[in-house]
Image 1 (cartoon, rainbow, N blue to C red):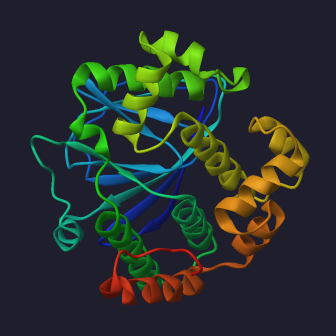
Image 2 (cartoon, rainbow, N blue to C red; image 1 turned 60 degrees about the vertical axis):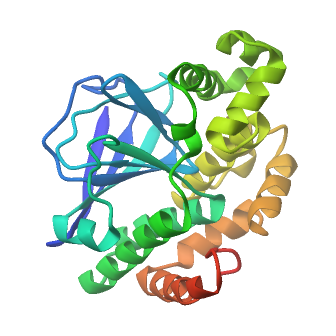
Length: 296
Protein backbone atom coordinates (compact mmCIF):
# COMPACT_ATOMS: atom_id res chain seq x y z
CA UNK A 1 0.00 0.00 0.00
CA UNK A 2 1.47 3.32 -1.08
CA UNK A 3 0.25 6.62 0.35
CA UNK A 4 1.25 9.73 -1.60
CA UNK A 5 0.72 13.29 -0.39
CA UNK A 6 1.73 16.40 -2.32
CA UNK A 7 2.92 18.87 0.34
CA UNK A 8 4.11 21.64 -1.98
CA UNK A 9 3.55 22.63 -5.61
CA UNK A 10 5.15 25.77 -7.08
CA UNK A 11 6.42 26.65 -10.58
CA UNK A 12 9.87 25.36 -9.56
CA UNK A 13 9.28 22.50 -7.12
CA UNK A 14 6.85 19.74 -6.34
CA UNK A 15 7.36 17.88 -3.06
CA UNK A 16 5.64 14.54 -2.52
CA UNK A 17 5.67 12.45 0.64
CA UNK A 18 5.57 8.67 0.06
CA UNK A 19 4.73 6.02 2.63
CA UNK A 20 5.14 2.52 1.17
CA UNK A 21 4.24 -0.60 3.12
CA UNK A 22 2.73 -4.03 2.64
CA UNK A 23 0.94 -4.93 0.51
CA UNK A 24 3.16 -3.08 -1.97
CA UNK A 25 1.67 -2.03 -5.31
CA UNK A 26 3.57 -1.59 -8.59
CA UNK A 27 6.98 -1.06 -6.94
CA UNK A 28 8.67 -3.23 -9.58
CA UNK A 29 6.97 -1.39 -12.46
CA UNK A 30 9.25 0.67 -14.71
CA UNK A 31 8.51 4.40 -14.44
CA UNK A 32 9.76 7.05 -16.85
CA UNK A 33 9.09 10.40 -18.46
CA UNK A 34 9.11 12.29 -15.15
CA UNK A 35 10.89 15.51 -14.13
CA UNK A 36 14.29 15.31 -12.45
CA UNK A 37 14.07 14.66 -8.73
CA UNK A 38 15.96 14.09 -5.51
CA UNK A 39 14.76 11.20 -3.35
CA UNK A 40 15.33 11.54 0.41
CA UNK A 41 14.58 8.58 2.66
CA UNK A 42 12.99 9.33 6.03
CA UNK A 43 13.06 5.73 7.23
CA UNK A 44 13.70 2.33 5.75
CA UNK A 45 15.68 1.77 2.56
CA UNK A 46 14.94 0.75 -1.00
CA UNK A 47 16.76 0.16 -4.27
CA UNK A 48 16.46 2.41 -7.32
CA UNK A 49 17.26 0.45 -10.50
CA UNK A 50 18.30 2.17 -13.74
CA UNK A 51 19.25 -0.27 -16.48
CA UNK A 52 21.64 -2.85 -15.01
CA UNK A 53 22.76 -0.63 -12.12
CA UNK A 54 21.15 0.16 -8.81
CA UNK A 55 21.49 2.72 -6.02
CA UNK A 56 20.33 2.68 -2.41
CA UNK A 57 17.90 5.36 -1.32
CA UNK A 58 18.48 5.25 2.43
CA UNK A 59 19.17 7.40 5.47
CA UNK A 60 22.58 8.94 4.85
CA UNK A 61 22.30 8.80 1.07
CA UNK A 62 20.06 10.82 -1.25
CA UNK A 63 19.49 9.72 -4.84
CA UNK A 64 19.22 12.07 -7.82
CA UNK A 65 17.34 10.90 -10.92
CA UNK A 66 17.69 12.87 -14.12
CA UNK A 67 14.78 14.10 -16.23
CA UNK A 68 12.90 11.37 -18.11
CA UNK A 69 15.01 8.51 -16.73
CA UNK A 70 13.31 5.12 -16.65
CA UNK A 71 13.68 3.30 -13.32
CA UNK A 72 11.99 0.89 -10.96
CA UNK A 73 12.08 0.32 -7.20
CA UNK A 74 12.57 -2.79 -5.07
CA UNK A 75 12.56 -3.25 -1.29
CA UNK A 76 15.21 -5.48 0.38
CA UNK A 77 13.06 -5.71 3.52
CA UNK A 78 9.67 -6.92 2.33
CA UNK A 79 8.09 -6.32 5.74
CA UNK A 80 9.31 -2.74 6.22
CA UNK A 81 7.46 0.55 6.00
CA UNK A 82 9.66 2.75 3.81
CA UNK A 83 9.05 6.50 3.80
CA UNK A 84 10.66 8.95 1.41
CA UNK A 85 10.32 12.51 0.14
CA UNK A 86 10.42 13.17 -3.62
CA UNK A 87 11.56 16.66 -4.59
CA UNK A 88 10.71 17.24 -8.27
CA UNK A 89 12.68 20.10 -9.83
CA UNK A 90 12.07 22.40 -12.79
CA UNK A 91 14.70 22.85 -15.50
CA UNK A 92 15.33 26.38 -14.26
CA UNK A 93 16.20 25.09 -10.80
CA UNK A 94 18.37 22.36 -12.32
CA UNK A 95 20.37 25.11 -14.03
CA UNK A 96 20.82 26.94 -10.75
CA UNK A 97 22.00 23.74 -9.03
CA UNK A 98 24.18 22.63 -11.95
CA UNK A 99 22.49 19.23 -11.72
CA UNK A 100 21.44 18.52 -15.30
CA UNK A 101 21.31 14.90 -16.36
CA UNK A 102 24.60 13.37 -17.46
CA UNK A 103 23.86 10.72 -20.14
CA UNK A 104 26.67 8.61 -18.69
CA UNK A 105 25.37 9.05 -15.15
CA UNK A 106 21.55 9.17 -15.19
CA UNK A 107 21.35 8.46 -11.47
CA UNK A 108 23.67 9.72 -8.74
CA UNK A 109 23.99 9.12 -5.02
CA UNK A 110 24.94 11.86 -2.57
CA UNK A 111 26.14 10.81 0.85
CA UNK A 112 25.25 12.94 3.85
CA UNK A 113 25.28 12.78 7.63
CA UNK A 114 22.72 12.55 10.40
CA UNK A 115 22.53 16.33 10.80
CA UNK A 116 21.45 16.67 7.19
CA UNK A 117 18.99 13.81 7.72
CA UNK A 118 17.46 15.79 10.57
CA UNK A 119 17.25 18.89 8.35
CA UNK A 120 15.42 16.92 5.66
CA UNK A 121 12.88 15.57 8.17
CA UNK A 122 12.36 19.07 9.59
CA UNK A 123 11.87 20.37 6.06
CA UNK A 124 9.03 17.95 5.45
CA UNK A 125 7.45 18.76 8.81
CA UNK A 126 7.66 22.47 7.97
CA UNK A 127 6.02 21.95 4.59
CA UNK A 128 3.23 19.92 6.16
CA UNK A 129 2.51 22.80 8.54
CA UNK A 130 2.12 25.14 5.57
CA UNK A 131 3.63 28.57 5.29
CA UNK A 132 4.84 31.02 2.69
CA UNK A 133 5.61 29.46 -0.72
CA UNK A 134 8.60 31.79 -1.22
CA UNK A 135 10.07 30.65 2.11
CA UNK A 136 9.52 27.04 1.07
CA UNK A 137 11.33 27.56 -2.25
CA UNK A 138 14.25 29.29 -0.53
CA UNK A 139 14.61 26.48 1.98
CA UNK A 140 14.45 23.84 -0.75
CA UNK A 141 17.04 25.60 -2.89
CA UNK A 142 19.37 26.10 0.08
CA UNK A 143 18.95 22.47 1.16
CA UNK A 144 19.67 21.06 -2.29
CA UNK A 145 22.57 23.47 -2.81
CA UNK A 146 24.06 22.40 0.50
CA UNK A 147 23.79 18.75 -0.50
CA UNK A 148 25.24 19.10 -4.00
CA UNK A 149 27.99 21.60 -3.16
CA UNK A 150 29.22 20.29 0.16
CA UNK A 151 29.29 16.58 -0.60
CA UNK A 152 30.97 14.80 -3.45
CA UNK A 153 28.94 12.22 -5.31
CA UNK A 154 29.26 8.72 -3.86
CA UNK A 155 32.64 7.04 -4.13
CA UNK A 156 31.06 4.02 -5.81
CA UNK A 157 32.02 5.35 -9.24
CA UNK A 158 35.63 4.38 -8.42
CA UNK A 159 34.64 0.72 -7.83
CA UNK A 160 34.33 -1.86 -10.56
CA UNK A 161 30.98 -3.44 -11.46
CA UNK A 162 31.84 -6.79 -9.85
CA UNK A 163 32.90 -5.13 -6.59
CA UNK A 164 29.83 -2.89 -6.55
CA UNK A 165 27.59 -5.94 -6.91
CA UNK A 166 29.32 -7.55 -3.94
CA UNK A 167 28.88 -4.39 -1.86
CA UNK A 168 25.24 -4.03 -2.94
CA UNK A 169 24.48 -7.61 -1.84
CA UNK A 170 25.96 -6.82 1.57
CA UNK A 171 23.97 -3.58 1.87
CA UNK A 172 20.80 -5.49 1.00
CA UNK A 173 21.60 -8.14 3.60
CA UNK A 174 22.18 -5.55 6.35
CA UNK A 175 18.93 -3.75 5.48
CA UNK A 176 16.74 -6.76 4.67
CA UNK A 177 17.91 -8.93 7.58
CA UNK A 178 18.41 -6.23 10.19
CA UNK A 179 16.91 -8.33 12.98
CA UNK A 180 19.67 -10.94 12.51
CA UNK A 181 22.47 -8.41 13.13
CA UNK A 182 24.73 -10.29 10.72
CA UNK A 183 28.43 -10.32 11.61
CA UNK A 184 31.33 -9.78 9.22
CA UNK A 185 31.81 -13.53 8.70
CA UNK A 186 28.20 -14.00 7.55
CA UNK A 187 28.33 -10.86 5.39
CA UNK A 188 31.55 -12.03 3.76
CA UNK A 189 29.74 -15.22 2.72
CA UNK A 190 27.00 -13.09 1.17
CA UNK A 191 29.66 -11.17 -0.79
CA UNK A 192 31.61 -14.31 -1.71
CA UNK A 193 34.95 -13.07 -0.38
CA UNK A 194 37.08 -13.03 2.76
CA UNK A 195 36.10 -10.84 5.75
CA UNK A 196 39.25 -8.76 5.30
CA UNK A 197 38.53 -8.16 1.60
CA UNK A 198 34.90 -7.28 2.34
CA UNK A 199 35.89 -4.66 4.92
CA UNK A 200 38.32 -3.13 2.44
CA UNK A 201 35.99 -2.97 -0.58
CA UNK A 202 33.00 -1.86 1.50
CA UNK A 203 34.87 1.16 2.85
CA UNK A 204 36.31 1.93 -0.60
CA UNK A 205 32.87 1.93 -2.23
CA UNK A 206 30.75 3.53 0.48
CA UNK A 207 33.22 5.60 2.49
CA UNK A 208 32.00 3.79 5.63
CA UNK A 209 32.84 0.75 7.66
CA UNK A 210 30.23 -1.99 8.01
CA UNK A 211 29.58 -0.85 11.58
CA UNK A 212 29.15 2.79 10.54
CA UNK A 213 26.74 1.81 7.74
CA UNK A 214 24.60 -0.26 10.11
CA UNK A 215 24.53 2.49 12.74
CA UNK A 216 23.65 5.18 10.19
CA UNK A 217 20.77 3.03 8.95
CA UNK A 218 19.43 2.57 12.48
CA UNK A 219 19.81 6.19 13.55
CA UNK A 220 18.44 7.60 10.29
CA UNK A 221 15.30 5.48 10.39
CA UNK A 222 14.83 6.21 14.10
CA UNK A 223 15.12 9.92 13.36
CA UNK A 224 12.40 9.63 10.73
CA UNK A 225 10.06 8.08 13.28
CA UNK A 226 10.94 10.75 15.84
CA UNK A 227 9.95 13.32 13.22
CA UNK A 228 6.56 11.62 13.06
CA UNK A 229 6.23 12.11 16.83
CA UNK A 230 7.19 8.61 18.05
CA UNK A 231 6.38 8.43 21.77
CA UNK A 232 7.51 4.95 22.89
CA UNK A 233 11.30 5.32 22.77
CA UNK A 234 11.99 1.90 24.31
CA UNK A 235 9.93 0.23 21.55
CA UNK A 236 11.68 2.37 18.94
CA UNK A 237 15.11 1.25 20.22
CA UNK A 238 14.00 -2.39 19.99
CA UNK A 239 12.55 -1.95 16.49
CA UNK A 240 15.78 -0.32 15.24
CA UNK A 241 18.00 -3.11 16.58
CA UNK A 242 19.61 -1.29 19.51
CA UNK A 243 20.48 -3.32 22.60
CA UNK A 244 18.47 -0.99 24.82
CA UNK A 245 16.93 2.46 25.13
CA UNK A 246 20.17 3.72 26.72
CA UNK A 247 22.20 2.28 23.83
CA UNK A 248 20.10 4.29 21.36
CA UNK A 249 20.34 7.40 23.55
CA UNK A 250 24.14 7.14 23.67
CA UNK A 251 24.28 6.73 19.88
CA UNK A 252 22.11 9.84 19.32
CA UNK A 253 24.16 11.91 21.75
CA UNK A 254 27.37 10.87 20.00
CA UNK A 255 25.98 11.71 16.55
CA UNK A 256 23.89 14.82 17.29
CA UNK A 257 24.71 15.89 20.83
CA UNK A 258 21.05 15.36 21.76
CA UNK A 259 18.96 12.58 23.24
CA UNK A 260 16.14 11.05 21.12
CA UNK A 261 13.50 12.93 23.14
CA UNK A 262 15.40 16.21 22.67
CA UNK A 263 15.65 15.52 18.92
CA UNK A 264 11.89 14.85 18.76
CA UNK A 265 11.07 18.04 20.66
CA UNK A 266 13.47 20.10 18.55
CA UNK A 267 11.90 18.90 15.30
CA UNK A 268 8.41 19.45 16.70
CA UNK A 269 9.20 23.15 17.25
CA UNK A 270 11.00 23.74 13.95
CA UNK A 271 9.36 25.49 10.99
CA UNK A 272 10.36 26.83 7.58
CA UNK A 273 11.54 30.17 8.98
CA UNK A 274 13.83 28.44 11.47
CA UNK A 275 15.28 26.26 8.72
CA UNK A 276 15.63 29.23 6.38
CA UNK A 277 17.72 31.15 8.90
CA UNK A 278 19.82 28.12 9.79
CA UNK A 279 20.64 27.25 6.18
CA UNK A 280 21.35 30.88 5.31
CA UNK A 281 23.88 30.97 8.16
CA UNK A 282 25.47 27.72 6.94
CA UNK A 283 25.76 29.00 3.37
CA UNK A 284 27.36 32.19 4.68
CA UNK A 285 30.15 30.06 6.16
CA UNK A 286 30.88 28.14 2.93
CA UNK A 287 33.54 30.62 1.90
CA UNK A 288 35.52 29.67 5.03
CA UNK A 289 35.76 26.02 4.06
CA UNK A 290 33.63 22.92 3.74
CA UNK A 291 30.21 23.65 5.25
CA UNK A 292 28.71 21.74 8.12
CA UNK A 293 25.32 21.69 9.76
CA UNK A 294 27.04 20.92 13.06
CA UNK A 295 25.92 23.31 15.72
CA UNK A 296 23.52 25.05 13.34
